Structure formats: C-alpha cells, structure tokens
Length: 330
Ligand code: SAM
Image (tube, rainbow, N blue to C red; front, top):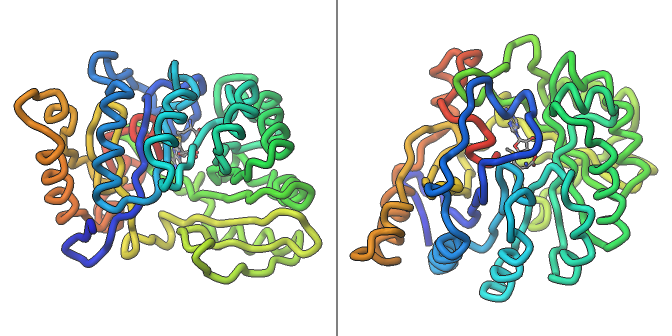
C-alpha cells in the first residue's frame, strides 16, 4: 500500500504519454511554452516498466493522458500491451477526441470501456477560439462512434465565465439527449502565464445554481461507482448526467488518491506542486533497477503535499505552479 504521512492511500496513477497536442487550449497551454525534447520523453517500454511497478504498489486505476495521447505514434498498440500485461488494471484514457474516431472499433475490440473527452463548447466558432483549431465535428464524430460502440463517455468542460457560461443550457440538453456524463471542471490557475482571472472564474456553486433554473437535478448518491471528486446529478427525464468538479472552490486534497508521472518520467505527487522526482534518471541508469524506483515512489509519496495550501499561498493570477497543464496531463 502506498500511504502518506497524512494517512491518504494512493490507488490511481495518471501517466502522460506525451506533452505534444494538436490543440492549443487557452486554459492549458500558456504563452511561452516549449516542448520537452524527444530524447527526454519516455519510451513505451519504459512506461510499461513504470506501470509494472505501479501494479506492485497496489495501484489499480491507470489513466493515460497527455498532451494528446492519440497524437503519439504507436499509442493503440501501447494500450494493447498494457491490457495484455495488466488485465486487472482499470484503464482509462483522457483525450480531446479529435483524432479518435478512426480507432473507436479497435478500442472497443481491445476492451476499452470508457473514455473521457474534453469538450468546452458545442459551438464551432467558440471551439476555434478556445482551441485554436476548427475540429468540433471531429470530436462530435468520436462521441457518436463511441456511443454506438458501447464505450461509456465522460465529457469534461473547463468552466470559464465569458467563454462557455452562456452554453450551459446547450450542455444540459446534450446530457439530456445522450447517455453521457457532462462534467464542469473549475478553471485552475496553472502555469506561470495562466490566463486565469477572478473574472473568468465560474464556480461549481454558481454553475449548479444556474443549471437548476434549466432543469430538475437529482443528486446521485456516493457509491463505489461514484466516489471520485465529481458531484453528480441525474437530469430529470434525461439520459445523461451533469457533474461538477471544484478543485478551486472546494478542494478534495484530504482524500487525494493519485500520483502523476509526466511524459519525461517526472513523478508529481500533487498537481499544484512543482516538486518532482526524476524517475527517468533511475530508469536509464543501468546500475539501478525497479527496486530503486519503487523505493523512490514510496519515499516521495510520504511527503505528498496538501495542494490547496499552495493554491491559497499564491496570487492565483500568477499561477499556482510553474508547469502548464499540457505538460502534466490534467
Ligand atoms: N489532450 C487531452 C485532453 O484534452 O483531454 C489530455 C490532456 S488535458 C491537459 C487533460 C485535462 O486537463 C482536460 O480535461 C483539460 O480540459 C484539463 N485542463 C487543462 N488545463 C486546465 C485548467 N487550467 N483548469 C482546469 N482544467 C484544465
């Protein structure tokens, strides 16, 4: 068991397979970003070693993220290798959905049961303002193909005042008509050049209040299936659900059960903290092996911070940490 000094147990790893992305979302990629040089990015082989170690540490849930994971060559066969070597692992993927449609049948055949798709707007013009690309139709095509293939979907929208707040009724209709979870995530001040501001912040409480003026929302009880940070609501008479994730206004650090590893092999024990542990150096040192990595992860996890303290101690418009989200993986 991977338990820290505050008694929290880690059971969930978010592994970023690349920092490259085909979109440039305003909340994610900050102004002066540079990509991690290729030689520093972990090979799939190295990532598989880390997943083996995670399994030994009783980590039972693995999320592959990015950058855009489907933008990395060989990603589908990487998924297949993970599923073969760790059939017990609850494997999830977070994607912007723009490159996925051609692979949906293959994913279903491999046994991928769920995808998280990030989609902040249902309007083509706004999609290009937020992401810098005209790709809304590709994302909608992926959603349609996944639903037909029986892949369950969570649609994650970063909630931004002045950007997508006017679309709340459209998102509610989308969740009413489709069997999907539409979840609003509060905009987090990530990266030194964050575009976060008090004016752009749309709190989960306000979203819920506004949503209730458009439909009847019935809270979903907390169960083994519904134990994550999202507060979920059934929409009366609808097929899907609405969810709210509030990392800024009402944090869940006390029950945080996750670790992150970036595509260049840096272990991050807290989203908001720039304190990282270089696992790549150990992986590539022929004199060191998995036992050293295991020890370093255990030791690092002991000091897992309470990220909310970091958020409170910083001027939010400056960004809580120096790393932009596309390099961490969300
Ligand atoms: N490219 C993939 C995608 O779009 O889902 C995976 C990477 S993306 C960094 C992972 C998640 O982080 C997305 O759901 C994105 O919306 C979220 N995210 C990025 N920056 C954020 C911010 N400043 N506040 C809240 N969520 C953010």
